Image 1: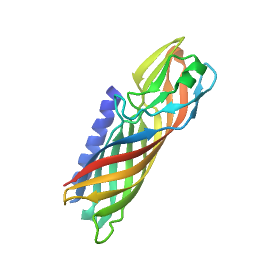
Image 2 (image 1 turned 135 degrees about the vertical axis):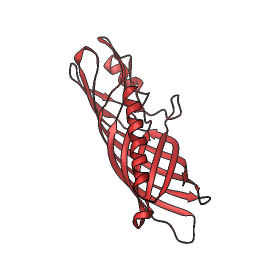
Image 3 (image 1 turned 180 degrees about the vertical axis):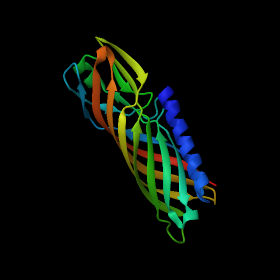
Length: 219
């Protein structure tokens, strides 16, 4: 839990610093949606590799969600270029076939794969309409809640997993000067390297794909 709180504090501090650098348009966004992940190979230091099928279960508790703060560089003469700090509570669960093959009774990152990234965004307003397409890319870290139960022991804790890359594309619709809604695709590729019981390590690479629906408030 300490790692998660520290990450959120870092995000807040970075947003505060960005706000103070220049007069700019700021936006706070919240979103949820449907998130999945394809199979990946899991390498365990004291056992055989596991070909893991992942389930997203986006709407199970705790649900998939995200929060984003964006600084659009109006004050620097680049109104369509922005920087964003993005936190998403992505999650994955090993499917029943994986558990049966591995002999593990529990294997998931369901209290979050927890992705924190810094991204560059570029928006392309469509003249004469309220639609604003945008694209973005960035990098950051993943902070998984590692949940593994196997014959040799149990792991249930937050850890710093490693690096994460992010790409996104979407379109916003501006209802008013301050409020807008958006639909987007967001993909993250995460290198996860964590400790589990008995001094062993677990490594995998997880690609999460999400279709998000959200709202933004500009100020």
